[in-house]
Length: 432
Image 1 (cartoon, rainbow, N blue to C red):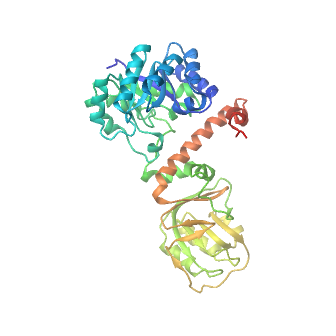
Image 2: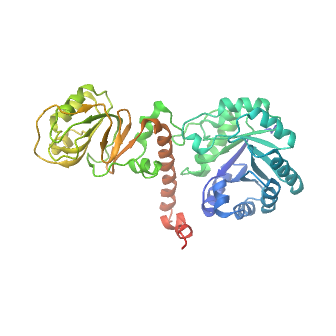
Image 3: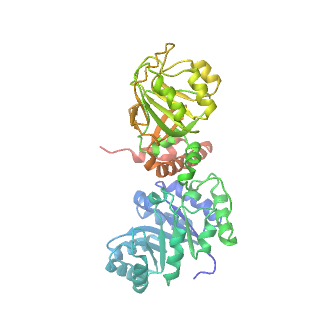
C-alpha cells in the first residue's frame, strides 16, 4: 500500500485546451496523478494522453480507456502515447485482462481494473490480482451518482479483499475525501469537484488537505442530494438548468410567470381539474394542500378566471408555495403586491362561478405536461418545469451538475473568452 494517499484528477471533458488549463491548476493544488478521462480520449484520441504527458512529465498520467477487448493492443498504443496507468474494465474477459497486463509489462505501464458493472466484486478482484493487475478501482459512475448512492460501505469491503491498492471514484469532494482515505482507499479520484470549480487550484488543495488530515473540509458545492434534500437542490438551480437535465423536456408551454423579480416557486404538486371559470375546486384544494405544496390547476386553457387575490391570500396564510393554472387568473397587481407566485396562461378581469365541477388529486395536463399529485413543480421568471417524483433525485443532481458546468464556463467568459471559442463550436459542427 502507498504511504500517502494519491489524488488523481479526472479530466472528464471534451476540449483538450480546457483540460490542460484545469490540470495545471489541479497539479498546482496538489494533484499527484492526471487522468485523461474517457470523454477526453474519445474526443481527441490518444493525442490527449500524449499532450498531457508532455505538459506534466513528472506526474503519473492515467488513460481511462475503459478497455473491453483487444487489451494488449489498447495498452500498447496508450503506453506509447505516454500513459503510465491504463484502465481496463473488470467485466472484460480474463483473456483481455491478461493481454493488457502482458503489454503493460512490455511497455512499462501499470493496469488499473475498473469494477464498474461488476456484480461479484470479490471473485473478480481475486482473479484479476492473480492475472497481475496493479490497482483495483471501485467506480460509482456519473450516471449512478445522480441517484445519490454512497460508495463508502462497498469501498470498505473491497479494501478488505484486495491484495493490491484500491482507487475509488464516485462524486468525491472535500467533504468526503477523508472518508475515502479512512475507508482504506490509496488513490482518490476526483472529477467534478475539481474540474467544475471556480478556483481549480484551491479546490484541489482543499481536497488534498482533507485526504492528508483525515478531516472533512466544508465546501458549498459539488455534493449529491438525497430524497430529503430535494427542496434545497431544486431551490439552487433554475428552470433552464432543470430542463437541460431532462434533455429539454418537462417545461410547460404557454404558461407565463407573474412573479416578483428573483422570486422562485418550489414544491410538490397538488393537482386540480376544473372547467373554464369554475373556481370551486381550485379554492377547495387550498384546504387540502400542505405547507409548501404547489397547486396545479387544469382549467382547459379557459379564458375566464378561476383564481384571484382572495384565493392567493388564503394560500399565502397557509404556506402554499404557489399556483400554476392552465387557464386564467385575475387581480395580478394585488397578487404581486402580496408576493405570491402565480403562473397562468391568461390574465383577465372577469371571474366565473363556483359550480363545483372537477376533481382534486387526479392526473392533469397543464401546459402540455402531464402532472400527478406529488410531482415536483419548479417555477421562476423563465417559466415552469415538472419533475416526476420517481425521477426527482436523479434530475435534481443532474440539474446541479448543469449549474456547476455553467458556473465554470461563466468564469472562463469573464476571463476574456467567448462561449463559441470556449466550447469550440466550429469543431463540433455536423459535417455534411
